[in-house]
Length: 466
Image (tube, rainbow, N blue to C red; front, side, top):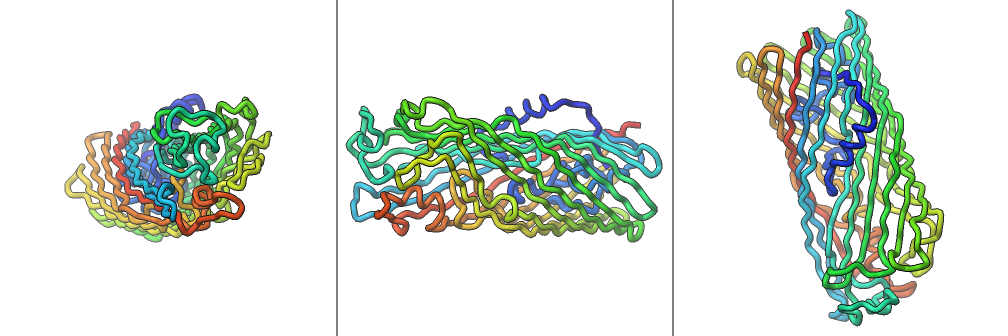
């Protein structure tokens, strides 16, 4: 086990969150990552019954006491994601026709660290600081028609230097959210049984922007756009785990992660430049990360270790819809009236997951790993949009461990194979781009899709604290 005790304040957590890039904090099991820690990365996250990493505090805290001596572990992963967005609008009026193909590349460094060890023969404890996951997207200069199909001059009500008499503009969207934890945990060893619990202080942040520009993309249109930024959000969560040693070589494990409910209240400004909306209004929003269930089996014999997990993530009960409630009625609907509610229908569905990993000790001090993880995309077609879409399903992993004295150096590579989804004609994104008035709805003329693939490089260092 390579686990963590580290006295560090929440200010450091926010510094880490602030350093995240303005694109994807790539995660593979919905907004969760498929693995936590370098060793488990090489096994594609199949670790519920395995033990031996500081990230057992997240995966299964019952396994905290497997190491005979205290350990410190620190590392990081670098996520590289490629996201594509395509759409087209075909109309009898050729001046309204357009097509977009946008690609976004993002690199995100994600650190983790912690310590853990036995307190006595039966009790072990640890503390870890890490990022749980997140998501977002960023696409610029998406060509689209003005809402209601008017000219830019008629749409804005302001003189526009370039292209005021045409009906097309450019749309820019940006979103980012992240979830970090400072997680202490304890485990008890009772004969062949292991029981553990992690009580985590969770920290979240979210930011979102949508702006409209003239057709050249050189200037933002006055009286348009939306910007939201949450205040620091805090919550409590927990992970409960059990494990049973069937034999010296075979172990079963189960862990339950409780939901994490963030109240991401903050401020939202809309329609910059319009004197009617001169101030940023307060906004309240609740975002819940769902509960997860995982069960696993691990078998070790001489140089071989095989580990497998099955799991379930209950997205549909917690994150089908995100609702922003403003203090003022500043949100213009596609039908022309104003509301104090901005509703984002994500249409997330539950996920079943499967992971299997293989570890083999080539020589004393040198170990190789591989793994496979499958999780059906948690997004329904009605929720496909450029902002929050995690589409990957098939993931492969390779890993390497090098032992030297009291140090263990682990490397892993995870690859998420490309996956593509087409948006439904009734999605929020379709309605926002195909409604030109209460009696002029052109859903069949607009279509859009998203695709995604990603790769992650993970490195971790473990030191035994003799």
